[in-house]
Amino acid sequence: MNKLAKVFVIAEHMGAMQELVSGAAQLGESTALVWAGDKGQAVGADTVYYLGELNNDRILEHYAPSIINLVKTEQPNLVLVESSRKGRLMAGTLAAALGTSVLADATEIIIDNGVVTKRMVYGGAALSSERSSAPTTVATVSPGVFETAAAGKAANLVEVPFVAPATSVKCRERKTKAGESVNLRAAKRIVAVGRGFTAPEELKLAEQLAAAIGAEVGCTRPIAEEEKWMDKARYIGVSGVMAKPELYIGIGISGQVQHMVGVSSARTIVAINSDKNALIFKQCDYGIVGDLKNVLPALLAQLGK
Amino acid sequence: MKIVACVKAVPEEQDIAIKSDKTLDLSKAELKVGQYDLNAVEAAVQLQEATGSEEPILVTVGSTKGLKNSKLQKAMLSRGAGALFGVADDSLDSIDAFATAKNLAAAISKIGGVELVICGEGSGDIYSQQVGPILGQLLGFANLNAVSRITLMGDKLEVERTLENEIEVLEVTLPAVLSVTTDINKARIPGLKEILAAGKKPTTLWGAADLEMTKEGNIEVISTLAPPETQRQQMVFEGDSEENIAQLLDNLRKVL
Ligand SMILES: Cc1cc2nc3c(=O)[nH]c(=O)nc-3n(C[C@H](O)[C@H](O)[C@H](O)COP(=O)(O)OP(=O)(O)OC[C@H]3O[C@@H](n4cnc5c(N)ncnc54)[C@H](O)[C@@H]3O)c2cc1C
Ligand SMILES: Nc1ncnc2c1ncn2[C@@H]1O[C@H](COP(=O)(O)O)[C@@H](O)[C@H]1O
Image 1: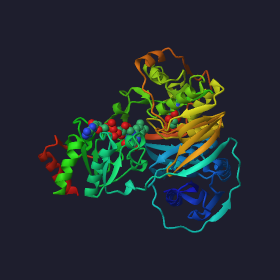
Image 2: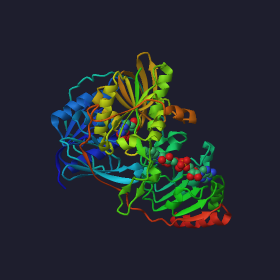
Image 3: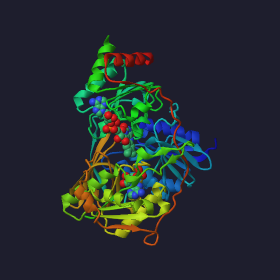
Image 4: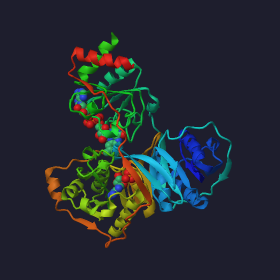
């Protein structure tokens, strides 16, 4: 594959940073990491452009003008940005300052007469292949696109001068979220719950099934975002976790594309739903039409035997 | 405070058909308001209700044919906003986020005096979560996404952001562009009365003659194709009888 001359990485979390730095090395002759926060963590790229500390006085957003300045001066061919919330904001801000758009949520990146990415559109019903031929292309990259390489060399560190933002955003407080850590992307078996569950107590049934077969529990977006019964890290689909389990059991889930695309590569899909016309039955290997409040206890009882 | 909420008309996803060559057939899919833009409208309306200022204004960019649809206009205007401005041209159907944001910026500048722009988390079809961030930079406003709470504090806003591992509480000086999360509020469901009243609210569609329109982006879409389908067995048992459960379990055991 052709390589670009210069590829930059902007990331805020260690894991994504390592993935993107290794991706940058695949795509570019020279690589640079643009980093704020703990200086010691920034390794792997040929150059580290160090922005400064992260604290209440300086959140990542405050470094946007410095980053824009740096990118305009250095003119990398491609900037790979972590697809976190802050990464997305930075990507859009930077692209707009460069007069271009963002190749968003790339699940694949190749160099072919410009930068060509694939991404899901229409909630996962289709894959769109998009090309940017901007002098500097900005792309946000989905997790798992690049393998993390072995820990890299200590880089040449360049301190980036701070350019003060013109608008005023003051950070008053930063609280760590209580959220649990769960990696559904790596789960081999998933029991997922949807809106067919009408009270949080009912989730126990799904948890028991998961425990019985050694599965992780996942859910649909409304269970996490609207009901808030489960951590957001547990919702599966185009805007959540793209999982690749061997076995997926969807319970009380209608089977809309935005969710199902997150498990479409599962070897076996099992569905439990009270509506025999539910979309999920068209996409499952085994299904049972029934009320989850009856099916799950019965299933658990027979499993125990 | 003059507030704008940005809403996009998107095809009803249930009615998107896949042709034999894997391309999409959108011809049967009616346009509706993007699901996550309803939270943007609701956030704008709630702020207006809290301040007693004028009703928020909706801005949309899309094809003339699509935006002329009065059912769609009513769907947009029946949720508490006071007026709708559209940047309409048949070339604007599939432009990129940058071009969309340029057109939104042109409309917002033409409206004039806008202090707060609220965008949804992502559009219902493309969902790139980029139009808000790009728009904020183009307008030169304070620019934040992942906003899960907005509270008015004098002439400033207190804004909470829900990020992957942390919550940020920020003080934002206007003007600002805020992209809100889907859990910031529960969008209201309009009744018949609101839908009827929406038909009487002012709707203005601007064309290339009215403002500086950006008809092309710089990202080229090479193809949009449905992914290959996985064949599934679709062995579905009706009813939760002992036998059916046992059958299901037999099959399940094969893969455990
Ligand atoms: C841009 C965009 C992105 C999105 N991204 C995602 C995503 O990443 N992930 C995601 O999950 N969703 C996503 N969605 C939302 C998605 O469109 C659906 O709204 C959602 O997946 C539906 O969740 P559900 O199946 O839990 O609920 P519903 O669609 O309400 O289905 C509930 C099901 O439960 C069944 N049921 C009810 N009672 C019982 C019972 N007692 N026993 C058994 N079954 C019962 C019903 O028959 C029904 O089929 C997205 C939407 C948009 C617009
Ligand atoms: N064509 C459009 N017209 C008006 N607002 C839009 C349009 N496209 C995107 N937006 C706004 O920008 C947000 C993010 O869109 P996107 O970047 O396409 O995911 C949406 O939730 C809308 O609030």
